[in-house]
Length: 113
Length: 116
Image (cartoon, rainbow over all chains, first blue to last red):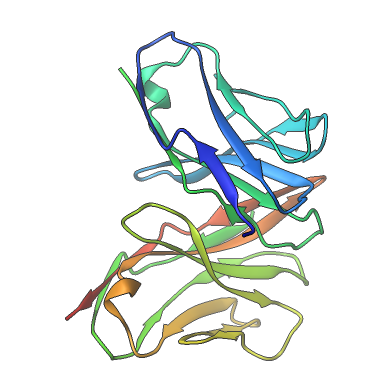
């Protein structure tokens, strides 16, 4: 089954404790992206990647890192999480064609205390 | 600037009836795609339907169809024979292309409740 997976689905952590949210897709997509969803602010893009070893900042990259060592994986790293990073996070992937459809993972609910 | 507007924050419909969700957008592009995504209580973001702007024909996926008016920059979603499982938030979205980035611009969403 074609899908985007994220882990963990739910995470409660404390300020400053490094964490990684994994994202993997099995559709051989070139393009991958991270969004965060917050009430009243909608979905905002954090980082995106056009291909292996090619990543760039979205609208709200502060406090996040990403890597793209393999085509299928695009982890989101929070080196020192803070409470304002409490949010619902989505990973998405697309085939890389200009107008291709983006498919979303199930989301990761992160709470930083 | 590219914008997406969903002006109805909430709607309610009786099971088995038809409901239309509105969306307007603004773009200077002449060729683009538009999407409707559904976010049920599970919070997953699920693609409902896609419309290519260069196509005259409105897209249809089973009970879901769109009314695409390119000149008016309007992209509404019609749900026929509403089912309880259609209860969700619905987002209109389309990609903003900037270099290698295809960032989706979303509307604020419409909360749809289907009544039994």
